[in-house]
Figure 1 (cartoon, rainbow, N blue to C red):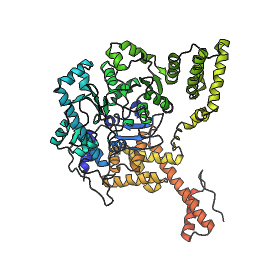
Figure 2: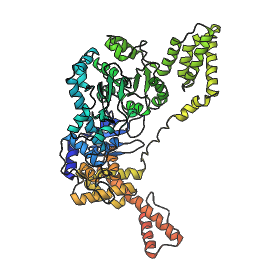
Figure 3: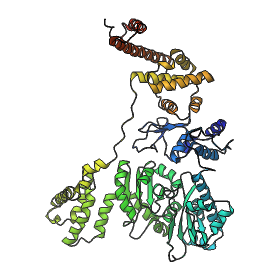
Length: 620
């Protein structure tokens, strides 16, 4: 089993803020570190991290919370023990016992299911990728051909180091032999996509390629991309990417994000390009907020990753690429995340890599400054690419433009595009207003005609994710009184703690969650003799009591004093009496009360009589 002292040591040595910031952009607001919750979709930051108590809590719809172990468990889909091992390694803590104690159900003594044998499948793949990376880096150092290729491509040594570039020689099984020497499992290497089984045994899949390692946000190698540095050979594609594995998903990964995330958060702007060399060229030129998709279209997961870091996303995609078409489909997702999407209108046949390598840095900078909204870019490109001299040309132009205009839900925005297109309308000679009105009618007909229902503003509104309901504020007087007392019980002010201990017991709390937490606090006090908030949270673990207490401590803006604590206790006791009185009265009126209960009711009636909120007198 993992020793409790080990867990406490890892927790003490781990900065929860630095761990969370690998995944969430945190900003200080009203003295708190806040960001968008990574565990549910939201527009307004409700995710709060407290370095003082070492906890995080979401005050939004998911209401999740916990310590640094719980965060790593959830964000990486790990068991408790796997999260502990990972954080222990980062904190340089040697665990006393590396195997968790299992209960009869097969669950770890500290929560979650049992990890796999050894370090678990995911950790084995991380390690085998790290071995492969060291191999590829070593081969690059020994390969004049690869180094010359890098120089010809204008890749400076500093950027080669920054992106950990490597090389896979045109050797049938060089990596395979290296992994065997290091004691790695070839089936694991197959699962990682590094080697494959052939007629002559295992062979390397990245042969003859410049290697681009792909890292996760914790800067662990999770996959590889490769580009042939010689002419493509039969059956050998120029580019090769790792397949999907338990640690790598193309739809959830952006190349260069581990290096770009700080710059993206600082600028609140991300630039998305289409290739490894585009990213590297941009970073080498000083544009560090640049990432790339990995051989796949822009996905909803990509959008959500970017939305947590930036309010503006610039797309540097080829105009005819599947990526830009996917961006059009993703526009609705960007809008739901309140992220502005713009497209770089680059010179024909150019990409960021070619522009920067040819010394056209200013052209690239200007393209970013002049980036167009996605719909405007598509419309202007239609006009620029298509002939418009004859009436037939202009009719063809509008046939292509109508589906684009019909997807714009905002009437105000659509009007801007109507004005852009009006000069090209066949009826423009009759006047701009006349042409614009014709365009509006055509758009309305497209919306309500064939396929129109799918493009109507109502359909768009229906497809947008419904905002989550606002969390309950808990503003009732009884709930407020319970919150005041629970906060007093873990206050660092001994006067407030003493007042709460003398005024209430756990049974005075009326709501089940508050009563459960109060019982835990009183048990802890009787056992330890104190109620230090951090000690209590450590003892509570990650159950509902810890979550409730974390929320109270991290959302406690109202100051406490003895009068407020005593008044809260009095309110709870009075409400408890009123509730008991009402229950006894029902029993008496129903004829089910015994003599002791009738006497108890009369005593309560006497105590409550004359108070401002006393129940009505007992009848009969």
